[in-house]
Amino acid sequence: MIDILDRVRNKGLQAKIVTAEEAAAFIQPGMNVATSGFTASAYPKAVPIALAERMKKDPFTINLWTGASTGPELDDVLAGVHGIKQRLPYQTDKVLRNEINDGSVNYLDLHLSESAQLSRCGYLGHIDVAIVEACAIDEDGNIIPTTSLGNAASYVQSADIVIVEVNTSQPLELEGMHDVYIPLDPPHRLPIPIVKASDRVGTPYIPCTPEKIKFIVPCDIPDHTRPLRAIDEGSKKMSEFTLEFLQKEIQAGRMPENLLPLQSGVGNVANAVLAGFVDSDLKDLTVYTEVIQDGMLDLIDAGKLNFASGTAFSPSPEGMERFYKDVAKYKKYLLLRPEEISNSPEVVHRLGVIAMNTAIECDIYGNVNSTHITGTKMMNGIGGSGDFARNAFLTIFYTPSTAKDGKISSIVPFCSHIDHTEHDVDIIITEQGIADLRGKAPKERALEIINNCAHPDYRPLLLDYFHRADEQTKHANTPHILDEAFSFHERFLKTGTMQK
Ligand code: COA
Image (cartoon, rainbow, N blue to C red; front, side):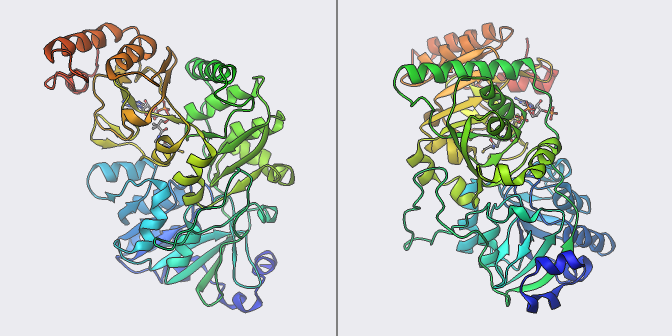
């Protein structure tokens, strides 16, 4: 109790400290509940667990808006009791994914940079309750965030009332690691004054008043971060191709020696690619990204990273332990911003970011599917990949050339769902090689992608499709045989493999 009182620095607010059950009792069926949290970092835990217990006895649903994916103590517990009716803007939870794909949850898969604005403009209804994890609350009622910012600041601003979970497992040294800037909405919006990754343009806290805070709930449950898969040979290869390519860009005078600010996506492949940078000759790197994973800590330890700006600190459990042991050191290199700033098209474009994200599948003309398995089943969501892909100086997509033990080719005639069009994709990299699509017409791109990136088992099938499509369309700009464009997917659904 002493710890929590120390962390609630406004003495008047200490009277609002209640149990998770008391706070959860305030939440009513059908409410729009908006929370902090981005990846398994800084999401509320105690109140959702208490809410799920209540829903178990007396079933009802809420609409849940977060920053992105969260940890099991939020998405998993609420999905586990069928307590979510609508969910936005991104998720990675298995139980929730199943409910999205069986039709019981309405999922709004949004560009993350736009999700706060969308919640502010009100056509989804207003936010009844914001539940936000905090390190501490200052004398004026402002909220000191923890390991991510996500949409927390905007949600606090828009919500009718705020429940703050003060998490005593989060070190107080996190204070000062945040830069909170909430843009005005049009027609009053001003340029975001960030010209380099380390620029601070806002406040180190989420602005709030004591009156707006309804309850304060103590919590000591740590972030449930996920282990990363060991780096496999394929990912190592993709990292090598990336480094070779970037070295050539430097030699050609298209990039400075320390590159441009890097953005690296979520997941195993993205983290593995970044790990390769540690052993390279590159130095004085900067990062302007969404999620800060283990690879960035490795770069800091190797003395290669000058600064990393993101919205979430989301390492593996080992990475988290490393960070907590030396917060003071890492804090000098890291800054967390709201996701509408970390992913801002305006800033990404100004800084000239190198965007590196992972695809589920790419087609022979360079369209990318980041979200849907065989065009229908939601995997995770678009996340920030569209924010970066469209606006970056250089946009790279990665995918292993096959999935599911070779039964699926990640290079297909036509993507079964398109998140990033051919216009936004500069480079595709698989463990087979690299396709540089810049300055190439569709048919040139097709040959580059099939010959360099497709798995040799699928190359003949793809070349056969491409050449027949070219013949049949009498050499059209983007040849397709419409009856066969999804034949790889259809074959997989009928026979369990895309191979003939
Ligand atoms: N068909 C069917 N399944 C496929 C597939 C395909 N074409 N490609 C990949 N998969 C499956 C894999 O087999 C794996 O399944 P498993 O979990 O059962 O093993 C799963 O998808 C994840 O693939 P993996 O190779 O481990 O990649 P990852 O962890 O790097 O995730 C994405 C890849 C695309 C799912 C992930 O990066 C994502 O959700 N991206 C969209 C959001 C985004 O880019 N955010 C970053 C912006 S900052």
